[in-house]
Structures are given as C-alpha cells and as structure tokens.
Image (cartoon, rainbow, N blue to C red; front, side):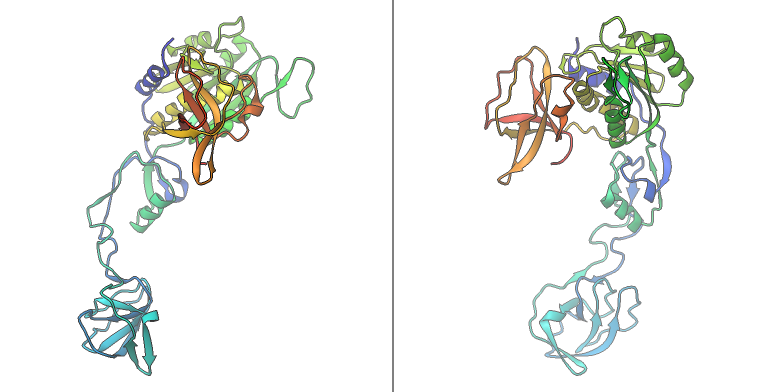
Amino acid sequence: MISLAQARALIAENISPLSAVAAPLGGACGGVLRQDVWAKDDLPGFDRAAMDGYAIASDDASEKFRMVAEIQPGAAAKCKIGHGECARIFTGALIPAGASQVLMQEDVRIEGEFMVPVERSRVTHVRHRGEDARKGDLLLKSGMRLGAGELALLASLGVTRVKTSPPVRVAHFATGNELMAPEKKLAPGQIRDSNSTLVATLVRQFGGEMVKQARVADDFDLLLEKTRALKRSFDLLLISGGASVGDYDFGKKLLAALGFKIHFSTINLRPGKPLVFASRGKQAAFVVPGNPVSHLVTLHVAVRLAFEQFSGGKTSWTLVKIRLAEPFDFQPGTRETFWPARMEIQNGELVARALRWQSSGDVTGLIGINALLQLAANLAEPRVGEDISVLMLEVP
C-alpha cells in the first residue's frame, strides 16, 4: 500500500488542466481564472467624494463658504472652487477643480446661500485617483477561483468575458445487484442507492458537470459496454463499488480493458483502502469503495484533487488545528484515518466533534458533516481539550 500523500502526488502528476474557455461574467462564478488580469486604468479613475457634504479647498480657512454649485455622482464638475466658495457634493461624485476636501454635512450648518463649518478636521473625505490600483497593476492571478468579489472587480474593469476552466465532465456508474433507485420499494436483500446522490452533489460542489450517471448490475460485460460507449465524452470516470478483491469487484479489470493505466489500487487509508486511480491520455478514472462513508472520505481526500488539477486551480487541502470538544469511540489502527466530524462555534471558539461512525456503510453518521479528523496511523486516543488535525470540508 502507498500513503495518501503518495497517492495525491500520483493524482497531481497524471492530470493536466483542461483547455480554457471564454465565459461571460454571469457564467464564471465558481470557475478558475485562467488568465492574469491587469488594471486598464487607475482605480478609482478620478478624485471623488467619500461622503455627502461640501467640497472646499483644504487650506481655505474662511469662516463661511458661498455655495456655487451642486455636483451629483456621474455628472461632470464644470465649476472651479475659489477662495470662500464650496460645492454641494454627494458620495461618489467628481471632486471639482480647486477643491481638495469634503466637509461632512453633519459638521456644517446652512445659512441661506452659505455653508458654515461647525467642526473641521484634517480628514479630507476624498478618495484619490489610483489609491486602489494604478494602471498596469496585476490585480488577479491565473489560478484564482472566481467568487462574487473577483467578478465585481472584473466588472469594474470593464471585463465582460474571462478565460476560465470549463466544468469537469463526469461519468458515474454505481455498481451492484442490490442497488435500487431511491423511490423503489425494496425486496429482501436490496438497498436504496445513496451513492449516486452523494456523488452527484459533490460533483456539483467540486465544479463538475455530470454527463452520464447510471446504476449497473455486477456484470462486467455490461459495464464494459456502457463505458466504451462513452468514448471521449468525459474527463473523469467514477465507478462506485468494485474496488476491492471480491469475485464481483472488477474495477481494475474494467479500467485495464478500457486502456487506462493503473497508478495505484490500495491506499494506507481508513476508510477507503481499496481506492483505484488510473489515467488514459487526458482522461482520469477512479474506482471508489462502495460504502457511503468510504465514498465521502475518498471523494474529498483524493477525487477532489482531480477536479482541482483539471481546473488548474489551487489545491484546497485545508488542514487546521482545532480543539476536540468531546470524547469519541476511536480505535487506533495501522492506517491513516479520516473520521467524519463537525466543526461548530462554542462560546466564541471553533471546536470539533467526531460524528458517530459505526461502520463505513452508516449513512446516518454523515448528518451534519463539515470536516474530517485526520488521525495518524497508530495514534493514541485523542484527549478532550487537545488540538486535533482537522480537514475542513466547508466553513462552519
């Protein structure tokens, strides 16, 4: 068996970023930027008022100022402010020539056509041209994930289309004679397929697009026929079940028949030991152990990296140290363990609580999961109050 670290290295080495595509800003949210973006102009592009108030020359010590103009946002400031003069101005409006300070309207009183300062300070309340960025400054680097803030910046720069990574096209087959659709009534020995829903949800979360998803019986020839029919229509092939060494576990055999190169088939990991990873040209494939907890863990600690490699984005391996809030039934083992857990805020402090884990098939143990406790091989039982290594799956 290889370690998880070695497995992740092999995944990273054998998957290359997909070719970038141009996308409108409205369709780029969550995508990975595949170009550097520089400021085309100074930001802001002109001196502007940071408050509603009155624009004056900062060195004008007059006791009162005659109002000579009103300047609204978006309007040109056609006047020039002289000694003893001011302009009524609103937040975001262009500072007129001759002015260099805005007195807030709360700090003045109005006497007819004059503004009389009640309180003055050295604060100018002016946002100066280029104080956010100068023309030519690098603002966004290739590889960043595009969220609301990044898209807002692109819009302010006049960028309406941007190069991003396309969604990773995923084909998924859940294998097993016992699997039935969730809406079906079960016969003895049958179970409802929860893995297809779990996989589809995480594929969307990881930035993928499901191009094919189906349940298939434990029939090698049938699965081979269905996967061959896909040809090049996918980037990532996921097979649920068939990763172990039983009579009907033919995941490795299937990938070999499809022309994939097997890079590893077992990891020193609990749960998820019989995880298979392979590649074929620019395509990649995983055979994931069938139990739901194993599915969730391996999808986060291994398969998610494949999505990140395809997208050309940064690796989201967010391990942090968090205090363990309560004891749990941990049994030390010889494999590195990722235990389902929940991070939550308790008395203003972030703490971690292990979720119940009776078996790798216990879906009820995944309720509320937003983290995995990272427990080294042969680790002694963690003690309450100690800091423990936690892989964050999402922000609590």
